[in-house]
Amino acid sequence: MKLMGVDVGFAKDRATTGIACLDGHKLHLSRAKTSWENRRARVPEGFRPSVIAIDGPLLPQGADELVRRKCEYLFIKDPFSRRCKPGLTHWGYGLALRRAAIEAGIQFSQLLNDSTSVNRGMVRRDGPVVEAFPNAFLGVFLPEEVFRCAPKLRPGEKFDWLYDRVIQDEKLLSALSESSELPEEVWHRLRVETNHELRAALICLLTAAFAADGTATVVGDVKDGWFWLPPKSLWQNWAKDGLDMAEESYEDELETIEAVNEALAEEGEGRPAAEVHAEIRKKISTTFSAPPKSK
Image (cartoon, rainbow, N blue to C red; front, side):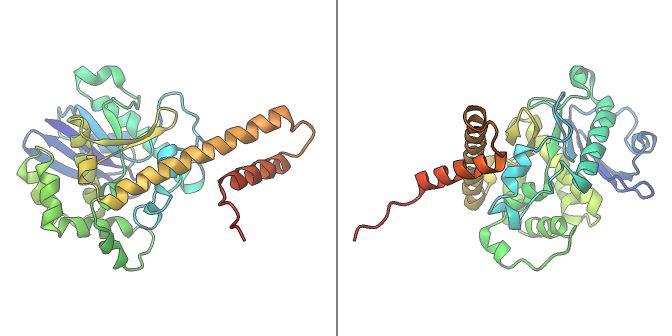
């Protein structure tokens, strides 16, 4: 088993890229800067992974760089929004991260072993390069009551808080370890690691393991990419139900957009789009509103 997890960092002057390499029973952790020369030097000589999981927004080949992603949309909805919400990556800081992740994907895919080299540089649902989302990976494990006691956290602190909650719960950690065949060294390092980037790289490594054995839960679509998350059997009920509700909400919004587009095409000529949009939304809300109470 040869797997790699990468936490993408893009600070130019600091080693903020975390790298975890698993070669059989040997685990190697390191941190690197953004250049490929620096990153490549932190990878064991001759290491050729079969699956690489990268913590950063990855797009399928040919996707619009500015596309809004379904997988991100689903996890900004309740109940995930206050527990393991992603940043949107089609603008601002998120877009910079998207570009850095794509660059990292191209860089690290050069390491893939010969059997998967045909897919280098491509992100596919069944491909060797997959997208990890560590906050959600950890968040879906945790019981609902854990979040009720969550402290107010500053930006960037949520991951380590989630990590500590999972690692300190032996029952959760045992369920996680029993669902994969990773060596004990991985679980030991998960328990003792304190560095933020290396912790994230280890969660990416777990993501790669689930992707490699085909048990990962894959969320998203072919147009704008996917999150690879733990097997659904490990999710808490609130997370399972939350994803179902988010999927329904997403489909409803797509139907609204299609209805507006149709109205613009059929009767909206010469009228402001906002006016037509408002009319369609009013019709939809009326259709789904409760009937008036009888007197």
